[in-house]
Image 1 (spheres, rainbow, N blue to C red):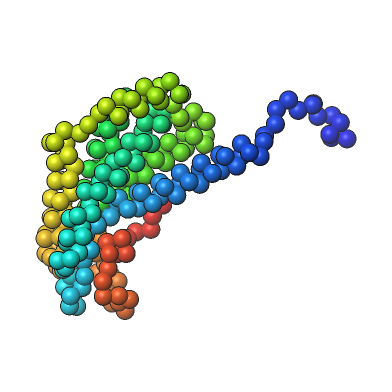
Image 2: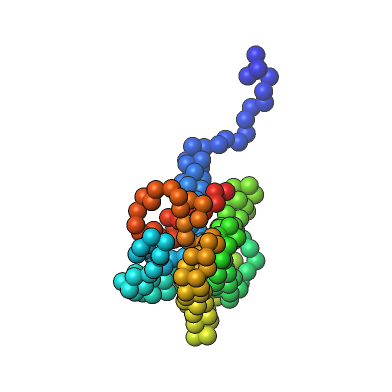
Length: 220
């Protein structure tokens, strides 16, 4: 009876369209979560050399020094690609400016306030995904995308900007280690990337901890 009273459908939701959107959403979220979880914590590995004493071993320092420039460039390039394709009104130069600024800001906060770094790191990617899901207008049209992509390909960072990107990371990481790990944390203060003092009475599960294994507040 109900089927007889409904009007004849004019539009249809096809399974291939649904599957395409599911694939985009799933892949985007996996890439976003992987990227901003990697960005939001200190990357220098520290080890407990004796009870209550944490140090960075020489080989771990070299691993950090050699890998972090590539990670910074990778994070920046990922954000640039998101901003190039997202419908945001930025031109090619502004895309690079925002990406570099966001990476530097997140890396500073990653050594100081974990919660702020977490929220900032996910802002741009999740906003784009939200626009795509809710409004369906999250992507530029083809003409604008080609124009912005051409401008972005013709844009390069100056030597000063590259120095700012990499140098800020090394300066902040050095302060985190020499001031935070070696002086602030032993005085009983909590520090991003280090075990919280309230958990020190619990049995240690390992002698070595990575910054991303340190206990942090629950992430939303």
